[in-house]
Image (cartoon, rainbow, N blue to C red; front, side, top):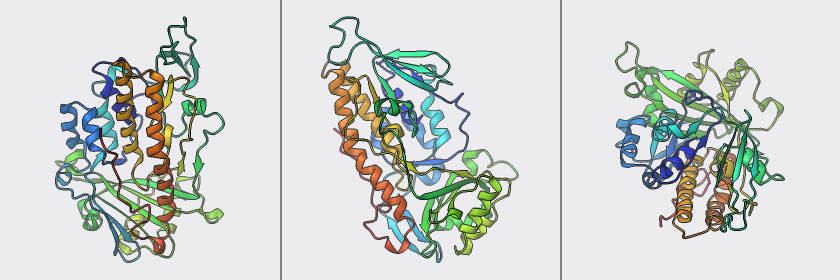
Length: 403
């Protein structure tokens, strides 16, 4: 929902819009992951000054964020040696749930909850003059509850299993699943427990094992000052820990049961340095272990956008793995480019078809390579000895120039 909210924030001043969200309400997704945003100049242009200023408060650690150098470590998980220090970007690490709530402010009245898309219907123009170069007649989104919403443009931004994508690309909408399996947990850690991990980096780090290829991601999601535990008898840190590995044999598949997943994490941690195994072996047995499906989708050279009536954004347009931290950032870039396209139509500079065609051409040129680079990064992260400065998982993230 982040890129939908962001687009809404960019449009709310002048252009009517409605947001249909499949979740029941804002409280449904409470897993508390964090995301790194490095397209801050684009986000600043989309948000009003007050909201942008409040982004600091939804960082996972606002105090550290004010002095963050942007360095990103890749470690040898057996020895803890720094294999690479990824070149810095100006970035902010946000608590995803708090970011969603912040972006929802100002557009809340336009959000319709529990609306799952089941079909898209193109309306026919009532007269030859209705199209105006933009298809005319409008488009209707049919929801699972038998309601519908109609408008002049439908933006499908409903994630990796997008029904809008299926409508636009019926013969090529399926995701590609990578031969890699990933599980993740959210943990509460005391200052004493988290100190050995924050010693390596106060915010986040990643690495892989030189022999087994097991990959680990660790990041802070909340500190006592931001999660409400600072003034309690037991202040805690909220952290995100993920492990992944190449699928080489049937036993590499992720078990169905939570107990089985936790046991698999402990097995895959074999050979890691004691700093890491201590944390993984100490995960409480009641901790939910989530499987994250590693899939992607490269946007094809073209699709029929129905003369500019229907388009895609975010994971619906370019699903990618998390190994370069680019998915949310490209979603924000989509929102920025979409706002520019819609404004150009409203100001009479382009027809709707011209504007959406231009938007989609830029999206493809930007994200086709990004999806493949993230795929390469996912696979390469599990081959420690093959990593070098040119490896996809280590390459600096590049911003497109702003017009």
